[in-house]
Image 1 (spheres, rainbow, N blue to C red):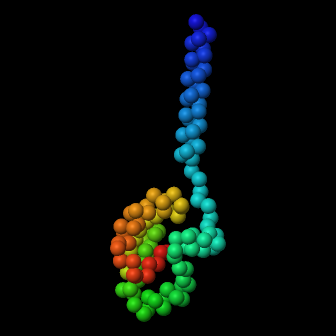
Image 2: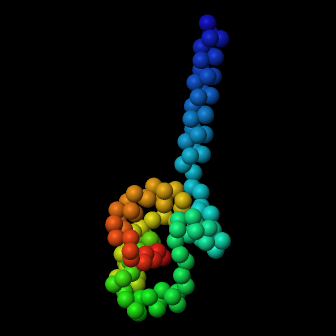
Image 3: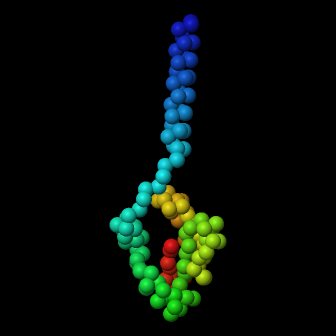
Length: 121
């Protein structure tokens, strides 16, 4: 009888240890991978985006800023410290998970007008 209780106790302790291990693994802080320029180009191509230079952006902005939708994806406090005039803030973590999680919200944010040039920074 004592052996039966010892077996159950051991099983319960093992279940607790596995649960704690899984929770620790799932919730540990992992720094995001540093994106390379090749990563940016590959993601832009996969998403159907066109990469432009700062000079091209400046020329577009001088020509017709109302024809641009500038989206500042930094955190709100960063946006408040300074941003390009007319840019709208859509805070998003720089991870694939965050972009996937906020995809529907971003689509609603951008709206149905797809004819405008959209610039993220």
